[in-house]
Image: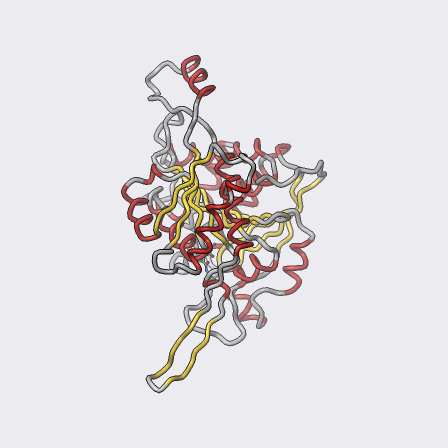
Length: 376
Ligand code: GGG
């Protein structure tokens, strides 16, 4: 789903680096957006606060001013957050809250490997579409004392409305995925490939990820609602094959044969886990971008977390944040700018000369940023 591109003089982008390496990679993404020139309206950046560190300083993890300022922005980039694993009175994850506040109901996570040669098909090329507002992340948890000790309970919310809209989003994304014929680069390209591409019927596919063999009420509703989406769409999704897979076997097959997937649509928790797992297939979590998308707002966010172990060392991989900025402007309709950023990043990764340690290199965040800027 693309957001309407009004003829804007400038693009107001909220920047929320938040915690840990978020503060190192979001400035890199900003530099790239500043460098792409006329492919986007002149960006105007609005620095904003959120996160654990802000909570420790001020007692609130998501200041009201941040949410209000975002409502005046065209889009935003969020870094990473370090919520503690224990319960802290008064604290609640700001990214979970922000997705709800702005009704960013889809977390779209493309996981695409960089082929050794630009003419070759990437070994992994899929999109995880994660429902972003419900499931166990409604965070209705209770600790109940019983005669046998404490009992912890959580509510898992799945609604027809949220399942339908995430289902539609998944089908729309499948429709927008490139139809392309890939041939070995040794074959003469020009005419053959162009003709084949004219007739190409790449299988566009949506796979519903669920566990409705066990959770037949909640996952059952998710599954049934999404299965109904094409039936209600007057043929719009006729070219998209609908598959489904139980979450555990989906993870197994993801590792064994990732090429069977195109668009995977999942409830919040499964989508969170599957997309991190899929990142392992492309070399590093430091490469995988996402956008939190609603009907009125878009927020880019690298899939990785705040990585406290490498915070402050200047070696965080900025590519996931840079690609998240590209994905954000792509969803706004600035395809040329997004393509240029993605091509520049692909070249840097493909050449393999300037890589951060997560990819086996010795380069710094700034080295990678500068290499990308040079390719732009
Ligand atoms: N950029 C993704 C990110 O920050 N991941 C870690 C995460 O989601 N943590 C949840 C939280 O700390 O509230």
